[in-house]
Image (cartoon, rainbow, N blue to C red; front, side):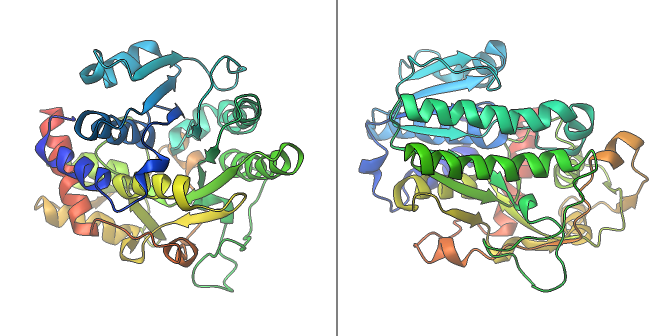
Amino acid sequence: MIKNETYLADVDKISNADYNWSKIDGHSFLIIGATGMIGSCMIDVLMYRNRKMNAHITIHAMGRSQNRLSQRFAEYRSDKELIFLEGDVTNPISENIKVDYIIHGASNTHPKAYSSDPIGTIMTNIIGTENVLKLAVTSDAKRCLFLSTVEVYGENRGDVEMFKEDYCGYIDCNTLRAGYTEGKRVSESLCQAYIEKYDVDVVIPRIARTFGPTMLLNDSKASSQFILDAVHNENIVLKSEGNQYYSYAYVFDIVSSLLFLLIYGKKGEAYNIASEQYNIHLKNFAKKLANYVNKQVVYELPDDTEKKGFSKATMALMNAEKLSSLGWESKFSFNEAIDHTVNILKNEIK
């Protein structure tokens, strides 16, 4: 993918953002969930800086499968600055790893995974986050990012239009689907506990529903399924009425914001990662992709496994003023993000 011209242009745009790169270049990273949508995109950006800007960034890429790591990052097999670590974050992480920055992005992140692996969904967040925080203590890391989610806000109670970082909506914790949301909530609390007891520097990005060309092809999120339908030049299949009103984000904007928070974020704070131009009803997201490939939106009933993993939230819009007040802004329009995602994936799948 890194040889795709459109993808490379997006990598270049993030790599040349007007940031204080001295806080990034020459430092070491542990990226957990390295083959996921966000982790893999982050590694491509950092490796680009190594190759183009002589950044001398050392990256420990951690994932559960050595084979997947080797396949996804085959382009860098001769680069000594990328080190593969096969491991499950629910197991203790070697104390021999000494890094400046830790990014914990390991998690089930789509509906089928929530329902088919409910225990793993919870434990990867809770136990995995504790193992990451323990490593942050022993390695004396400069900063740790725990990647949280818009879903910690739960269902909008009808008293606000958009979620600010201090909002707390309703979650029915006595459901299978709640494992993901509650796992993230408890993990955020665990971060605060480690900040208090061990003075660990943790920042918590709360990430909008994300899409982009680094998505996994088995991703069962509605937006990801729409994109795959468009990539295959098929009608866009919508498995609900599509009235859900959500904030979305392009994966390159997410990576941009994470790097920004490593440099400029405030210890212990949570930040919404979103942009108002990406607020859209689910049915309109489907229509946009249908129009893009000259197809139609068709409606189908979800199967039982899919239904168990669906979010109950009908309106989840994120107020990102806190992050934008620090100086971050989206670098891609919604139309650009759709165009780049579909065309890059078309090329890669072909």
